[in-house]
Image 1 (cartoon, rainbow, N blue to C red):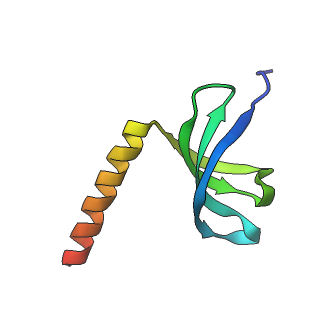
Image 2: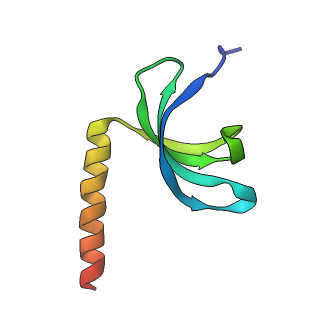
Length: 79
């Protein structure tokens, strides 16, 4: 059986949306199993007692994602 899974939310940046039964899609900075914190985008149950599947990003990856989002939004405005 694998070791215990631990996480610590270092910074809560905000809620992107709220869904079923109070679950929220959030961007946070999280340390998993004591590792260097990463930017984390996923759904959370109220009070963060359960988490859904999500994505983690290094700072560079998050910057690249921001640039891609900017491009996508610029292209969307032109249509």
